[in-house]
Length: 506
Image 1 (spheres, rainbow, N blue to C red):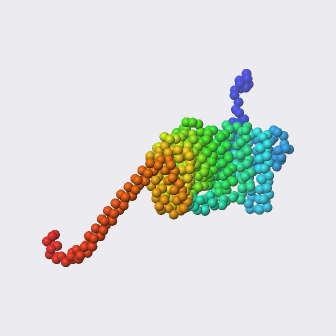
Image 2: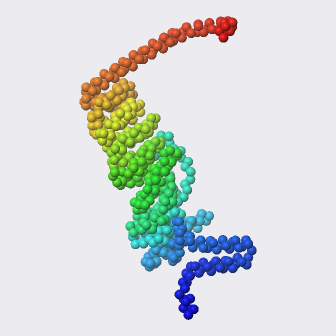
Image 3: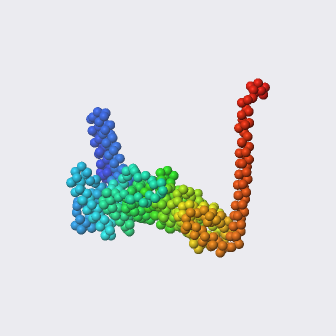
């Protein structure tokens, strides 16, 4: 009867039995030792229990995932094992690639590097074959291997930023370890692009800290590495939709630091290239978050001196925004005028080219809001003594859409432009600019001859008034100089005053 009752009682699980037995053994051992040993054994007992919890709730690469994986000799080929053993062999080979090569022994280090390289090539072939199946253990092992081999701290930059913004003329620096890094990048790219990869499982390991470390690699001096990172980050953005807001925020922070603090970063062009394709996929109407990205991130990128390195990608992003919402053209032109360069002619050429692309897409209503400050700036460009800037500004009249905008608003634009053309025809030193000025004046006369003549008469009146004011100032100064001619004689009389007179005055 008693045995039947005991059989119905619930039994402890095997894991709890092991934990209790470990705890009892530790307690028995601790009771027979001094206080120091008791503390040590108590800590060991706690750590042994925490080890079980850690296997269940590890943050990045849980040990419990690998606990049930059967170890397979990593030197075996995938063709020599059965299909059920291939995932375990895949994990074993990844673990082999996590080991650092021995740098103290050159011969041994070279052999280890060759073995690691052959293993990586075999892994790339296996993943690209399409027969691989990634369970959670394989995903964790892949992310761990990539983190160990790719994530590193770059040496401090020693190349100074060029003052002219022509950093793209510098020869790129190539990483001597690229042959090994390339295989790791190829493997990770094949892994991310794998169609049967479970994004819900993979996002536990390709998480926000992992993405931040990946973004840090865009600081690499090697353009080949940045190009691989560009493709990988774009695939991550497309596959892991839960990480999209975080990626946009992280990239924004990188650009904030670049624009307002350091003006040093190697991967701005690649990051903008990624965002060019991302912006083209934005839904219409645009969210307020995306508009803020344009105003707070993209437009301030026109400020740094190294604009020439990434200007093409930046212009593409800006044009994509205006294509989605034409009303943003007003904000973009206003931002360009805010950051318009005064002493950097190469940047000024870029600004004129970007303005032309924006004007090709702008509507008449938006154009009328910004035409006055814009053409005041263009008039200054027409008068630039840098002949390329003046020549590029004259070329705007060859654009049919811009010319049509000018025709419809000629009552406002002609008075802004005509004085600059007149100054050019009299004072500019370059013959090509003089010829372009002559052609532009002829074009204005063909559009509206009466308005051109009116602008010419107004300019003559302003010049005559300016000459009269100049003559008045000249006569005023002459009178002052004439009056100042008597001042020394009067000044000589001051020391002759008697002290008594001064005392009386006081």
